[in-house]
Length: 310
Ligand code: TXA
Ligand code: MG
Image 1 (tube, protein in one colour):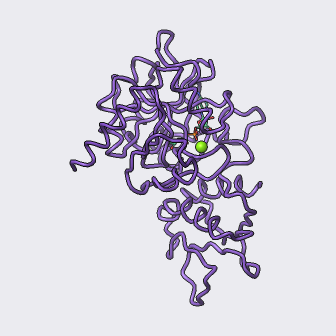
Image 2: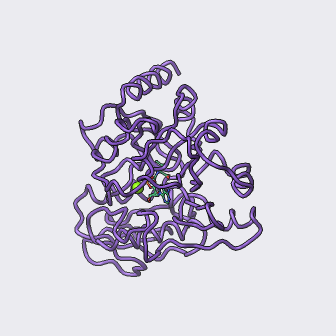
Image 3: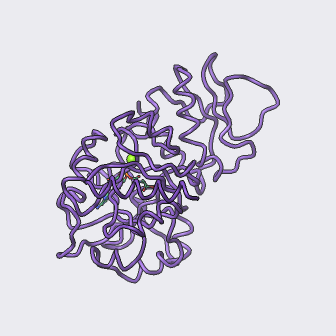
């Protein structure tokens, strides 16, 4: 416990000096900086090799912080009550007098925000008088990080400090919903769309592949381990890593399980670490058995199909 406190204080010091640090969240690790400081936010884009046109998500610990920056509506409050803190990101209208750096939003009048659930991060946010802008802690288009060691692998010494919070519990990025007009899903993620529809009592438009990109998580190549991925495979090739969701009777050193009993929550949690492990073992290609296209299975399939555009 003592260690955690001193780590949180260290993280705070780095942030106060306009540095970028890595933070744990329940979805994936993030690269965080003071969202009110252009100086700090610019460093995120450089580190991540991210185009400046791709806006960042801002992380808050409470509503009163958010009220300073965004206009809130009824739909927001309904979803907030049910799902926050948790793996959902809202795109809202930015207030005119908000202090959010224009680099966070790429000068747009909307802001993506979320309330992370990870305890250590919540403790850190509670100590700050500014919210944290944070994209996923990986080089653009590459695999996201779900452990402190993954972040180290991505950035090496380029990152000043990694706040270690153990393995991310959800394991895939947040679901993004835009509430600036009628609700619209912009990215499938850690919260099932059906759960959101149940609260709003209506079907919600899903717009994850628009002709004009709004969220670059929508872009074709993303989440990639850098080797080809084949989906819905029943028979892997020789020496190909084979990712499975149901236990097989036969043993093979090339079999990798996301879950052994088709538990999609467990599969999501293990997705990025499994792909990273396979990549590090220098396989030339990855085969994955068919994943049911329901609930979190949809979010997993969406990521795999973008990753397979390699
Ligand atoms: O789970 C998550 O959301 C993680 C953790 C670290 O919070 N963050 C994350 O950030 O996935 P990132 O930057 O990898 O993905 C954020 C996505 C991008 O696709 C970006 O284009 C979109 O959110 N986005 C950000 N601001 C937006 C806005 N104002 N309107 C539409 N999309 C936006
Ligand atoms: Mg990302």
